[in-house]
Every structure is written in structure tokens, then in C-alpha cells.
Length: 296
View 1 (cartoon, rainbow, N blue to C red):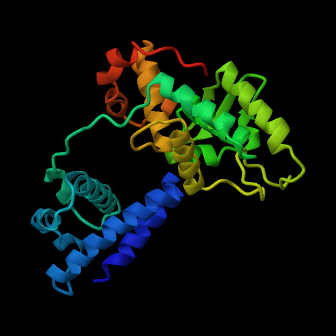
View 2 (cartoon, rainbow, N blue to C red):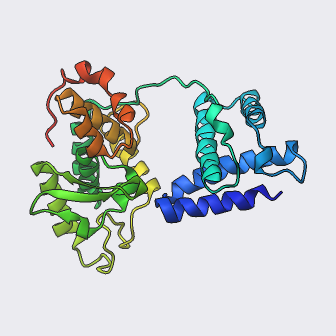
View 3 (cartoon, rainbow, N blue to C red):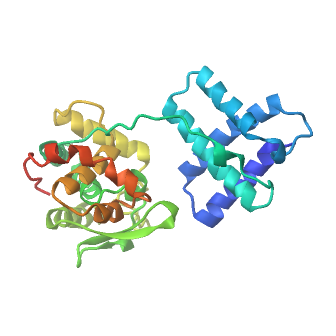
């Protein structure tokens, strides 16, 4: 059987029916392609999806363990299989979903790297003081990402029509096409307004581009560019440790909870699909509450 043709049909449905992002589709493709390779090596040529039993899947998971995959990686691959086989069952390709009785690898939940409020302020100040012509853009980008808790993909896809500086809000299209409107602090709104008026509105930029955060050529910023500028400003601010743009999102969640914000409000603010994702920030609540207020 040509296993991958079914996977291609599944990936197409993710895009058309669920509005999955390119990165999500790529991740599913990589995980399911690896599983298809296992099926080709272990099952006869005339096998169908109905022949893929829980024992076959468990042998694949065992193979991952023997190849020294991290438990978190194996768990992600199992999650991909669950979604895929659920889809197969719904479409009538299989009569019973074998993953319903499947046990996922145990993954130790770790609290992600967090910035203190003082470190957030230092990061933003570093961007403001940079000699680069992009300093105001970088400050606006980092401040908006922190205040709103946006993911990198959400920030770089922000369009001018999504920004309302009359109400100090931004509209964000999150995962699964779930849209949310997020308030800006007055400070973040002022920084964003200054960027839009004095940098983004410069004639050097391509006026036909409607993305908010752009490069000097007028094109949309890439994820790699945002990662690079975040690490650069963190280094200049003397912030140690592994810092990524997503660290700002993690930190915002922890700071909101430490301020006594309702956890479901934080879930809605950040666009978490599950409350359990938001719950992971609670252990740092008491520690974070001792830090000085952030200025933005």
C-alpha cells in the first residue's frame, strides 16, 4: 500500500478544514512520514490501514526509544498518530481506532524559561538604545509581543487593519483560525504608534505592504529575524540564559497570574486551547509577585 498518499490527504484536510499553519503541517508530515517508513518495513505490501494494530504502533514507539528519542519528542509523535488515526476512523478508513488504548510516553513537565519583570524592562530598554535604525521597530515588536503574549507567527502576520490605536487593541488570528482581540497597555500603544508614524510610514518602505512589522525592503519579518533580534538585544541587556521570542509569551503568562488575573482570562488572552497549558505557570506565581512592576 502507498501509505503516504493517505497522509497527504490527511494533511490537505488539516489545511482546508482546520486552517492549520504551515509549521503544523510540516511537523505532522515529518512525524507521519517516519511512521509510514516503519509500516513499509514491517508490514506486507498488501497491508491496509486496518492491519495497523496497536501492537504495530507500540513496536514503532519502542523503536523510537531504542533510537534514543527524547520522551517529549516521542510523545509528540504519538499525539500526531492519535490525531491521524482519529481522522482515519472518522473517514471510514478503519473500523476501530487503535490509538484509543495507546499509552503515551511519560514526559516530565518543566516550567519554561521565564524573565523577571526587571529583565523585561532591560530587554525593551536595550532595543530602544540600540544604534541600529531598526531600534524603534524592535522595541515596538518586543513590547507588543510581551504585552499581548503573541506567538512569533502571530506577531509577524499582524496587519495594519488589525491595529486599533483608538481603543488600544490588536486583533490576532491564532492557531486553528481562532481570533482574539487583545488590549495594549498605554505605553505599548504609544511605542507602536511612534513606530507606525516615524518608521513604518517612512517612504523608504513599500506602501503596498500591509504587514505591521517589516524589514527595510518593506517585506514581512521572518521568524528567524525575530529570533535573532531578540537574542541580540538580550545579550546587549546582559540577560543570561537561553532566550527566545517565546520566552516573552511564557513570562507574560506568569506575570499575569502573579498579579492575580483569573486563569481563564489568561487562557483567553494567550489563546491557549487547553486550560492545562495555562496552569503550568502557576508554580512561579509567588516568586514572580515579589518582582518590581514592569513599566510597559
